[in-house]
Length: 128
Length: 216
Image (cartoon, rainbow over the protein chains, first blue to last red):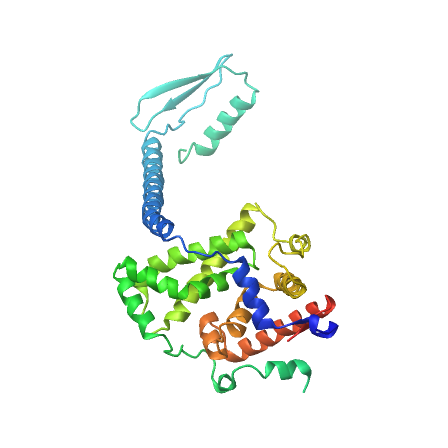
């Protein structure tokens, strides 16, 4: 064999040799059937989890909506604003007309006090 | 005409006339078709006989797709069998059985490569091939050693190719698949398959030349 012949690669034969020498010799049919039967169960389990998650997400969404609408009905309107010596008191009335008074234990110039005053002034005409 | 173009002249002449996106020819073995029909109805014996008839083609294709990595090749071949077993009932008889089986092997091998890349459990770098011993324990004579060395050089060069290109080249060179058949399998126009095969072969030839080998 000459040195030139030694350095030749016949693609078809070499590809086949390389593939066959690295490929597995026998198929494992028992493993095939076992895994094929396991997979639908796995898929069903994933689908069930996804369904549960979707139901939980939808439920929390609607509960949130209901909660928001519920609290909005009870929202208090500030219909008067009085400043007295500390502690500061805010008189409020609900939509049912019940009079309530919130006492702010804050100084007249404190941020909370100023915020409530601002809120009252901006909502005096239309409510909150 | 260049040497490469002469080489490429080995492509099936009838393929050049074929148009893009040709449907697969019905060239399936009647025995395979009969076994596939029975296997699709849940006959495990028929499935096993069919797979034994296809085993060399499946394992060779999978091994080439994963660049001759024995561990990946085993995983890809086994995964292919599982998918074929599950997919046979959905096989539409108007398409080629061969194309259908190779398509399943292709996606299974691709998933195995992706999964391995994700887990990064094992690197498939060229250095792995560099570290291989060139002497096989089963090689006795000089010819065997040289053959083994040549195969390893080819494996090293093939490693640098795209998996799809490797598998396409394998099907064309070893399994004798024509351009039209490959086009239908890979969902590519015949012209694209032809130019792709030419480029792959050319690239392989250049790489082997750098290693001191002539591709025939």
